[in-house]
Image (cartoon, rainbow, N blue to C red; front, side, top):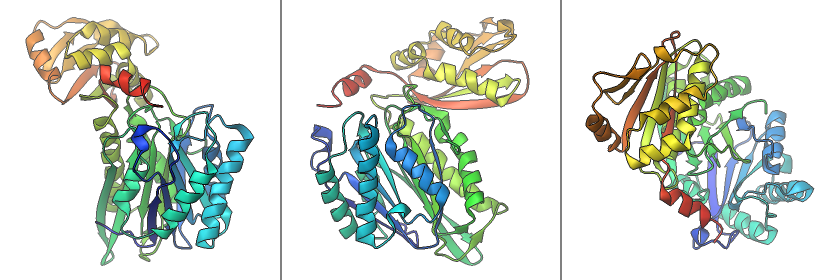
Length: 399
């Protein structure tokens, strides 16, 4: 297992949730960083943001991050002023154990919304996590932040720079309530990325914002943006190697880590049996192409057709039309399922073969391609199907 210099991780079992999915597993993660680390983050745009999100964002802006404390089983969202107090208490506990300022610790939570964070459980989990701190605890860390995830999600890259091997590591969780909308100024998706390179905070923030747009913000399971979405990137600087905007191999590796993790979210989508890449070409702008891709990728009718392996392409037309494009001309639209032409110039393609389209949809991974023929801009979204199991998982989530 790879080690990122200047970063230690520990997990503990607090017993935060009584739900069967949390029994017999760790539910608290503490990540500790050497002094001098720089950090950046992007956070949910949901109007009902959880208290930990506001606290983490404010403390990131102040700088001097030394630790993250993450719990699963309770989102600490819709909890009012008491929720802020309890998130701050968690940071104070971590600060006391590590001998750092409480303001240098950032809180993150995921789980059931609307319940106060159980502080007795948090104290026990934090104490155990700090006792277990190690530079090799990445797999345990990925497991501790899981909710309805069925597998831990972690990824590593190494980059050779100035005769030194730099590490990049990332963990993420998310299987439902996934349609991230995270911006630097502002599913549950939680992602934590760490490198031992030394990177200026402004550069770190700019790169994280850019790559979040091409990774986590381009996936959707159910169209619901969580109250707790957050992605944090920490550069410990422990390698002593300085990375600037021109270190293209390093930044390419970081983007690969983020895109791989975002793909893993769809691969583990609640009840999912398909991963479908919706590619929209020929828009006036990237935003226009993305709005069409998102409309199709989030449509329940389209997603249930994916699950049924039913090439009911009329649903795709409906979703394209719902994207709200100005001066939209349906006679320009073409659609293909994999390499099977479905629509040409706004009507069924003369080459359409429904049996062939169905065979494409029977694959676990395939592309749905849409051409708007309005310009040269392109965008894509990665989505899952919508199955009976998704309803079952979410109906039973609190039991």
